[in-house]
Amino acid sequence: MTPPDFSKALLAPRYWAAWLLTGIFWFMAKLPWGMQRRLGAGLGWLAWHVIPQRRNDTRINLGLCFPELDESAREIMARDTFRNAGIGVFETANAWFRNPEYYRHRISFEGLEHLRAMEQRGKGILLLGAHYSLLDLGAAMASLHFKVDTVYRPQKNAAFEYMMTSRRLRYHQWTIPYRDMRLLIKALKSSHIVWYTPDQDFGRKHSVFAPFFGVPAATITTPARLAQVNDSAVMLIQFCRDGDTENYRYVITPALTNYPGGDDVADATRINHELEQLIRRAPTQYMWSHRRFKTRPPGEPHLYEEKKKWKKR
Image (cartoon, one colour):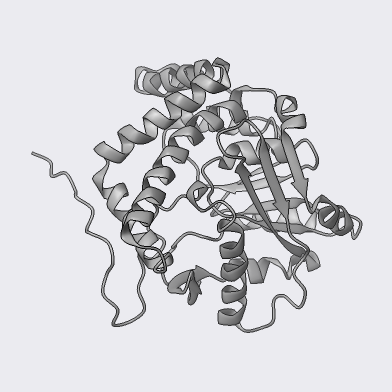
C-alpha cells in the first residue's frame, strides 16, 4: 500500500493545530530516553489530575478486574497506568519519527518461531493483541522481523489522518480502516499478517457477553469469523517495556487449535482468557482507562458515570 497523496488543502488554517502537534511529536522523538521517560511520567501525572473521568474509569476497571487486591494496591496500579500512558505518548512519537532499526538490539522476542511456522503455510495470520500503552511502537518493532497490516480507526482531522497514516506505512504493509471489512478480508486472502485488537466494547451488535478478568464484557465475534477466511491462523501477541529501561519484551503465542469451535460465547471466552493472561504480564501497561464494560448484560446496572456534554450557548 502506497502512502496517501498530499493535498495543498491540508495546509488550510483549520489544520495548523494538527501540523503543530506533528512538529511536537517530531521534537519529542529526538529527545534522549531519560528525558522522554521523565517528561512522559510528568504527562501521566498531569493527566491523572486534570482528566477525572479517565481516572475514575481506571479505578472502576481495576476494582472489577483485581478484586483480590486491596484499595491502596489498586490505587498504585491506577497511578502507574497513567504514568505508563504518558510515557507511551513519547513511545508513539518514537514509532512515527525514529528508525525502527534503533530498537533491533533492544527487543527480546519470545515465540517468534511460532509465527515463522505459520508463515510456511502460505495462508493468512490474524494477530490478536490488546491496547497496550506503547501500541504503535510495538508495531514498529515487529516490522524488524515480519510484515504486518493493521486495522485502525481513521481520524476526523484530515491532516492528522494523513500524517498518522504516512508514518505508520513506514512499518505497516497495509493500514485498514476498521469498517473496511472487504479490505481486511482481502488482506487475509492475500496471506498477509493482520494485526487486530478485539479488546474494546463496540456494543451489542456482533458481540456476545464473555468474561474478561471474570467480568461479563461485550466481546466482538469478528475474530472467529475472520479465522475462517483463507483458513487463517489465529495467534496472540503482547509487548511491553522492561521497567523504566529502553528495552522491550515481545511475546507471540502458538496458533490456537480448534478455533473457532462454533460456539460464539465459548470462542469469545477463549480469546478474552488468552488476552487476560498476556495483560497480567505487565498489567499497568494496559489501557485501563477505556470503558471496557460500558455495555452491560440485560438487567445489570451501568458501571461508569455519564460523560459530561457541553451545551451550546
